[in-house]
Image (cartoon, rainbow, N blue to C red):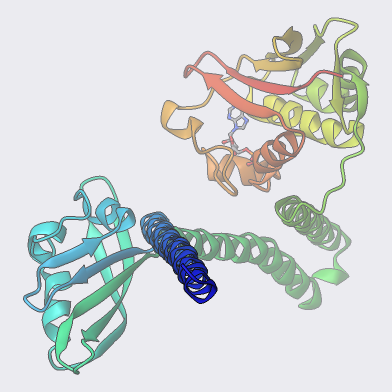
Length: 392
Ligand code: ADP
């Protein structure tokens, strides 16, 4: 082998080695690239899966009910809220609207979309066995990319709570107007009587001035109570919490009512143990106790007995119990006496100067303290009011 042949052999060997190394490198790069692509695909699939799960969770947790139907009117997808509204188990795929909702009006909406592309704010009243519900429905015809009809989507908003609040608001406004109008018309007719000559007769004048004074006071009380309730509703009442010794606090209120109680022959007793304390705003607690003691004297038995007791409860709470021996509260009224303007005997309450707001204030003030109030009563056996408060 001459030098040239040797050189060529070495060259070939080097070329072979380079090609091998090149192939190896190329294969490694190719494999790495394929691995990277596979990784990217897996990552994209995981992202898509996560996105689908997020969308499904969102769809299912929506407050609004949603039903998507296919072009034949059968359900493709429905969320939990839709199932709850109509009483079916989602997704209810393949069922007709009528089968799932059992409501002709809802099923008819899908048909209506054949002529109208969109039905907005259609209102529906569902009369159930136990309650009536109000729904607002928005329906939209869906189109595929080629413009062909591709079913529809229906969104259901439950308006029931809103309607209930609206009814409560309307009733409240009607009650307030009525409560204001009664004393106002009495004041006005007394003023007219005075102007029509009554003022010239001192006896008539003083009688009608007393009427004006009494009803003006009633108006002031009513407006004060209304303003306080409005402030309690909007959390604008600042509570100055401090440990309040309950026996002393109850005694202060009983002392304030001593004259009123004596006039009705009612005995007031304080049996709250010494050392019992609540974490409360002393002025607000006084107001609560005053409302309850006032009621116990007013609605309890003439010549009767009102007693306030107290005890500690588990969980760092204390309880005050105010008992009278009057006619008590009828079973059907027990759940309602804490409502604004609710009275068992309207005439009796008005005659006693009640605003019908006392117990609503008691409930709101106690709840603002994080406490609770309830009543127990068997007709004829008196009423017992229980207040729980955090211990002081
Ligand atoms: P009012 O201004 O009419 O006293 P409240 O809200 O204080 O308003 O009380 C609501 C109603 O609850 C009263 O009108 C009365 O019918 C009833 N009530 C309250 N306390 C007693 C009680 N101790 N015994 C019997 N009925 C009561």
